[in-house]
Length: 311
Image (cartoon, rainbow, N blue to C red):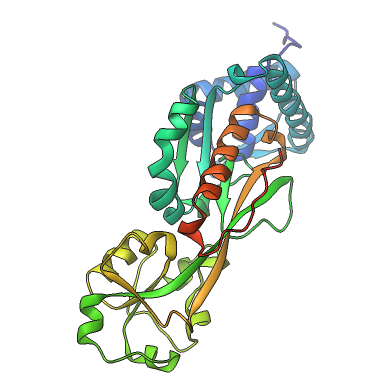
């Protein structure tokens, strides 16, 4: 029995999924198929090409030298296929399919999720997957199609757009402030319990607030979740640095030292260059930018002009 020299684009999709994740099970979830199907398609591709693309070991699938060369060609074919599909299906009919968006918990839960009904109405054929565990998502491996980040990537094949600054202040509940010692300057903050992020789990420099407020502050309650921090603040546990767009909707919270302690951070929209021309990805990017632009008062007390996402 001889091997067929032919393989299909579907075969390349299976190859790329395994190459990017290194795991059959992860690739299967991404492709919405079974572990066995992925294994069978990889075996078939290697049989067809008469080469070994992966080394199998207990840690997963590792690319061979020929596999490393093959992935470059496969990614070029993938990019051209995406562009061709976009050209053939130009217009609103091209805005179909799944888009996986990675975003910080605060932005996703307290801003974007409230507006997804509007997105659904505008783009009924796009299925949006919203992931808020951003620290483990990789655009380079295309585990996400699009990401809202606090820090822009330092390099790589990405399209990056700053979508907004946002301000943060120190907040506390009215009940906490009524029973606590007065706060008239930064030094007074050291006498109060703080709520903050777990230091060794801060995945973005933009979330490292405490040294900017006062280098002597050590949080008494720490959580990787901004929702948990907000809940603790409303529960009168102490002071907490919160974004204005989150805290402004909590009438029981008051700003502490507003004139002296105001921090500014940024949100960036990042997309892999290979996906930046795909209409459904552009539709999500444009919606996010438009929503932020229309609600600048939620992020800032002034409203700078924003640009458009460059696809």
